[in-house]
Length: 122
Image (cartoon, rainbow, N blue to C red; front, top):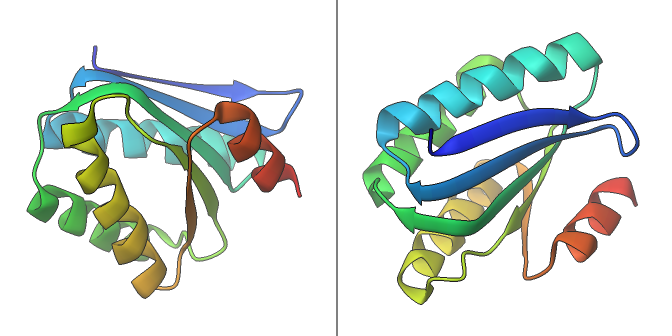
C-alpha cells in the first residue's frame, strides 16, 4: 500500500504517510480513510508526510481531489504537508498547497515533521 493513515492520540492529529507511487485511486482511498478517522476522533487536523512519495498521480488528479474536499465539508480543516525528498515530486506538493489555499483551505508546507506538528497544534 502506498499510503497509511492513523490517529495520534497524543497530538490529536490524523497522520497520513505516503510512499512510492501513489495512484489517483489511492489518493481518494487515503482521503476516505482520513475523513472517516477524522469524524470518529472528532478532529480536523491532518499531517501528510510526503517524504517518501515519488509521484504516481498528476496535477489534474490533485485538482479533482481538492474538489472532493469541498464536497466533504472540510472547510474547517488544517493540513500540514511535509515535502518529498525527491525534488521532482516537490512541485506537485507545492501546487497542491496553492490550489488548496486558493479554495480557502488552511494548508501549509513544511520541510520537517516537527515544524508541521507544531504549526498544527499552534
